[in-house]
Every structure is written in structure tokens, then in C-alpha cells.
Length: 161
Image 1: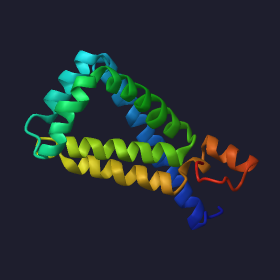
Image 2 (image 1 turned 135 degrees about the horizontal axis):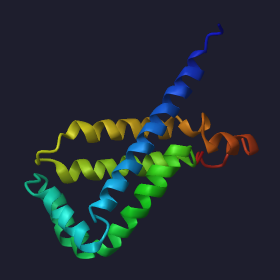
Image 3 (image 1 turned 90 degrees about the horizontal axis):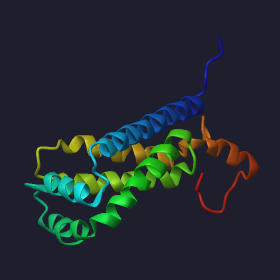
């Protein structure tokens, strides 16, 4: 039985993490749709409940004074980003470095918004670590669409795949 070298094992592990985190984003998206969180009122109500007791005053103020009054725009943007970029792109390994960085930024946002609440910050820290590793490790080049793109153009000008 042939053994895999360390680079192949790393590639497979990063691809598995990429697929897992993409599936998690899709599952959360579906749950949020069923709860009506992507409507302007549902989004605003969710944010209010999410940040109750938050300890970062400046971030709570940002959400209360900017995001909630513009809930229609933010709800739509999150609806698209969560299913397409963070869900599907990660699941199929398309433009993985971009999708991973977007997902890490989104997870950082969740961490900041929830500090001081009953949310466990470790979950968001793990999401950030996984999505950064997936992005930097170009995890779409194993079991992903990015593998096809790299065959066509092995050295893109920007590391987008």
C-alpha cells in the first residue's frame, strides 16, 4: 500500500476542512432562512437579540446605529455572501483564498458582536483559524474547482485560487 507524502496529507486535510466549513455555512444559511433572519425586520431583531449584553460598546453602537437602520441592505448582503461565497465557494473549492478570507472576516464580526454575551468565543476563534488556514493553504487546489483553474494558469497574478 503506497504511503502519502506530507504535502498530499496536508492538502487532503485542508480540503476536508474546507468542505466541512462550507457545509456548515450552508446549514446555518438554511436555518436562518427558515427563521426569517434575512428579511429586514428579522435581521434587525436577530441582531438586537444577538448583541444584548455585548461588552464591546463601540461595536454594539456600530451595529445599533449603522447596521440595524440599514438592515434591508445588510440582510441581503449576508444572504448572498453566506450561501454563495462562504457556503458554495468553500464547499466546491472555488476562489478558495477569497472565500476563506471573507469567511474569516465574517467570523471575526460574529466574535466581536458576541463578546460579553452567552456565546462561547472559542467557536468563532476556531472558525477564524480554520478559514484562514483554508485560504492561506489554497485548499481548493485539492478536490476543488481551483485545481482545474491552476491547471489552466498555474501562477495567477493574484493568489485567488
